[in-house]
Length: 92
Image (tube, rainbow, N blue to C red; front, side):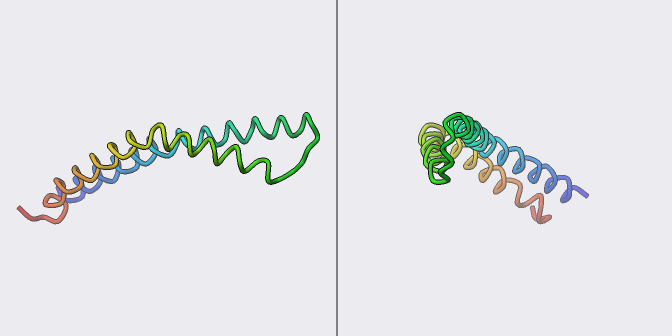
């Protein structure tokens, strides 16, 4: 039973870390996409390639600005996963 508890805790932490890393980037991409859609609707320019470039730039800027913090979160999760490995596998 302790193995499942350790695995459940690690899985929960992995999901929270994934959300903490992915959600800010997805939110910025959605906001930029919405802003571009509003501008396109107002100007009646319906060019599909114009929607991609601002999103790529925004996501790239987010990765450049917060990539280091995201890597620290992922590295901390990896360290905790290695520490929890004996508890999950039933080893000592």
